[in-house]
Image (tube, rainbow, N blue to C red; front, side, top):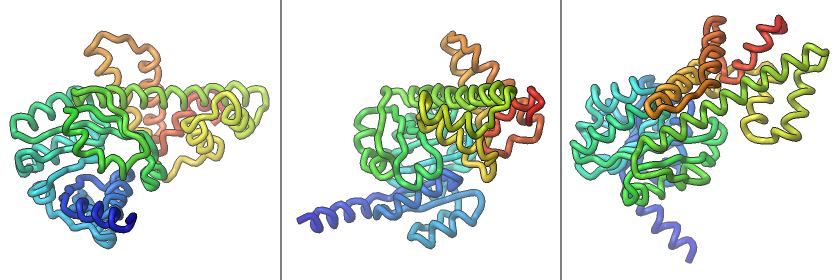
Length: 307
């Protein structure tokens, strides 16, 4: 009985055509999981290597964003920022190629303003649009255990829930306006930056009294701060492990800036975010923008002449 149900589910998945745009650090494992689940997936990426890897697993290569979006029932984009999203969906004709009634799931971290503009453009084209940024690093994406933050029209979210079930362990819904999910994601990312900076300050203080960095990190991640963000980034900090970057520090600066922009729009003061922006700029000034976000902790130790 179970085999029959599984076969029926696989057949339904094969009937849905998915276009996937952006096969970076996060997008590649996400697209791979959809292929493994039996979906028909056409993929596009600026660099061809990731496309070839997905094709070897069963995906179909899209020649252009327009080609990838044409005839797709669902288009998923996982692009780096506002500019990349607009370039692919608007300038390169991705949205124009989508058929009426199709769904675009934007899973990238973009600005609130961009989400509002995209939703309007999709509505004018007759294409449904939802935001679904994710929480989790590449190992979490590979395991299909992301937390997915969603917002959009409720019926549309129900239609794509089976896709979310493949990509994540839980789907969190935050409203019927797509930008609401993006606001939540920006708030969370700024809290992550705060955690990394706080660890850096704690390390600098304890090192000033001769305490080894690894011992301090072991203490806090085993007791009061035994949470994924502290454990994951803390381990990288303790081991000076900043390459390869799971999430580049330069992208962290982008997200803090977008958070401050979103906060200004609704008159919310974020004084800590201003400090975080300057800490990121300090890191970039020292050539660390390509390193993992964990390198943000170096700002405090460098200022204390410990780095």
